[in-house]
Structure formats: structure tokens, C-alpha cells
Length: 366
Image (cartoon, rainbow, N blue to C red; front, side):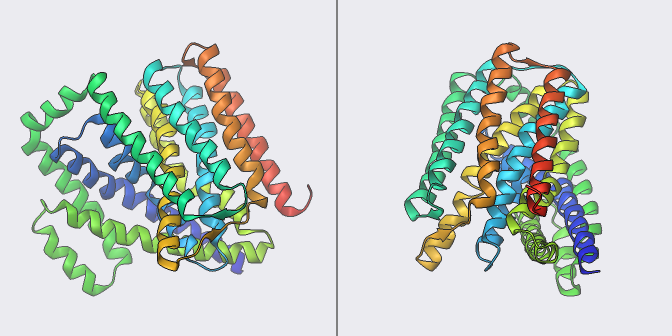
């Protein structure tokens, strides 16, 4: 009975996280990016990456401060990264043939490979030091600075249109986004918030231009739901007599990544599969460097001691994470940055084998 309750609770938390991120967290980030006229690449690698990776980031942040659940955050990040590369990219390739622009793909794959190699180095002894955690953050800063340089050296084709739309259609779009964000957010809020916060939210509704407030409220919700995910994962792992890392690598990784997968498939059907592939690669870089580096840094600075991570159940997944980068690069090179249904089937097959391995390993068969 406790197992069933934990599973139902996880499904509900996944649903609420997806609704909050999709319906008004990402919308508020998009408007902030427009308001500050951020270059397309920089906005995508910072604000939009936060929006798409918020569940993984907060799950990692909560887990590292929860005794007995330290491996949940790492497992969720690593499992989500594997899911993004094999399932999202594979699913996009299966839906439609995707032709990619070689230059940004090589750029993003290069930084992604660097982040995976850094992860190998950090996990070598299972102890995360202050220097290792900060190195993760510094590499992401280098990535952002490189994107700024890149956007000036190779301007994004749609950037002028992006800014022109804001200038010519700001009033209409502003009203439309405000109505959508506040109506949907209000529905979620009234479901999971208490009466005191409900009145505060209604006061904010009278001032829809206050998107930082929407951003802050959504952060609170995501943090609370991430805490719920961590606690339910610990309970489920104990009831099934498996490690928390296995639950994180499979259940949490899939649950937090499915909304991104659905959005990517929709985008690919509209002929923008390249955007979905680039987002999958870019979000993995954010997940590894910020999703792990930031929680580790906060924990180490707050407790003045390193983070200890049990890497036994994560070793195979980390190896597959590195292998998936090499495989994807080989596919791009061989197919001249065009991927279709054959590549999609191969990537999905590899993930299915990995999932079966994780399940059988957890059950003691392997």
C-alpha cells in the first residue's frame, strides 16, 4: 500500500511540476529575457535552461541537504541527461528527419563533452571538494562567455525578428501572456496553496507586470514539490529494497524529463527538430555543471565539509553518459549532421537496454 501511495504521489508531483514550469515559470523567464534584450543563445543557455531544468536542479539541491538521499540528486541529473540524449534526440529523429547547423552543434557538443569529462574527474574518489564544485560553476561561466562572443561573431538569424516582435507587438503579446500565465497559475495555486498565500497571489494579479513576483512564487512551488519528490523517492527505494540512486536514475529522471520530451516532439513535427536537438544537448550541460555544481557548492560552503557521493550504482550510467556523447558525435559526422529514423531507433534501443539493465541490477538479477 505504501508503494502504491508513493508512486501515485510521485505522479502527482511530476504533473504539478510540469504544469508550473510550462504554464507560468517559463513564460515569466521568456518575458524577462525579452525585457533585458538578451541574445538568443545566452537567453537559451541561462534563463530557458533554468526553466527546462528547474525540477532536476531543485531535486539535486534538496537531495544534497537530505540525510540518506545524497545520491538522488546526482542520479536524477545523470539519468535525465541520458534520457535527453537517447530518448529526446532519438524521438525527434524518429518523428522527422532533422538537418542541423554544424557550427552550433559542434560548439554545444564540445562543452557538453567537457562537462562529462569533468564529471568523471569529480566522481573519481566519490568525494566532492570545494575546488571541484566551483570548477563546475566556472566552466559554465566560460560557456556563457563563449556564447556571448559567439552571438556577436555569428549572429543568430532570428534574433532581429525576436527583438522586432517585441517592439511592434509588445502590447498584444504582453496582454496575452499575462492572461495565460495568471489564469493557469491561479488554477494551480488554488489547488496546492494555503489561504494566506492565496490572498497574496490575488494582490499580485492586479499588477501583472510584476513578473519577478511570478518567478519567485514559481520557485517556491518547485522547491516544495522537489522536496516531496526526494522524500517519496526515499520511501519507495526503502520499500522496494533498492538504492535511492536507482530510483533517481529511472523514475525521477524519466518523470522530470517527459514534459521536455513532449515539447520536443511537438516542435519537431513543426519542422524545428534542430531546435529540439540543440536544447537537449544544451540543457544537459546546464544540468551537469549547474544542477550538480551549484547544490554542491552551497552545501560545502554552508557545512564547511565536502560532499560524499556513493558512485557504485552510478558508474555504469556515467559511462553510458560519456558514450552517448561520442555516439551522437559519430552519428552527426557520418550522416553529415542529418539524422533520421534509423538513428532514432538506435538511440531508443540503447536507452531501452540501459533501462532493463538498471531494473535487473536493482532486483539483484545482475
